Image (cartoon, rainbow, N blue to C red; front, side, top):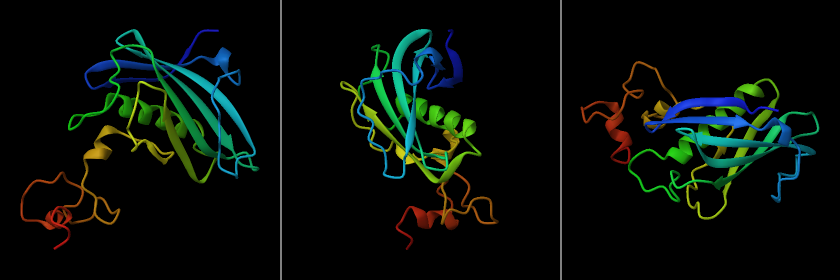
Length: 182
C-alpha cells in the first residue's frame, strides 16, 4: 500500500512531506504507550517524514480514545533518520522539527475535529540522538507558524487595541507585555 501524504509544507526553507504508512497501522511499534487514565483504547499510526526527498524522520503516533470514542491523548515518538535533522534546537531561529510536529498535530486535529474530548493533549517523546524541545507538549489544535509570532494579551486577539500585532516598540498597549505589565 502506498504512503498517504497528510502534510506537505515548506518548513524553514525546505520541502517537508509527512506521509502515513497505512499498511503499518496498529502494527507492532516497539514503543511503550502510556496514556492518561481516561484512555480506554488506542490506535497506532506510523509516519515517514521526508525533507527535500530525503527520509529524515519517522514518527509513531499513538492515538488514545476515551470510552465515548473521542480522541483524548496523542503520543508522538520521533526518530531521526538523516543528518538533515538537527539533534537539538538552538534558537533564535525556528525549529524545523518542532514546526514539523506541529503541522502533524494540526493534520490530526483536522481529521478528528468532531471526535475529540474537551481537552485533547499531545506529548512528544524523542528517541536519541534527538533531545530537548520540551515545548512540544500541548493541546491538540491547529497551528500556523504565525501563531508563535503574535503578541497576545489575556487570550484576546483582534480587539481595538494593538494586542494582535507583533511587538513593534511603539508606545501602545502591547509594551506592557514586555515590561512585566508595569
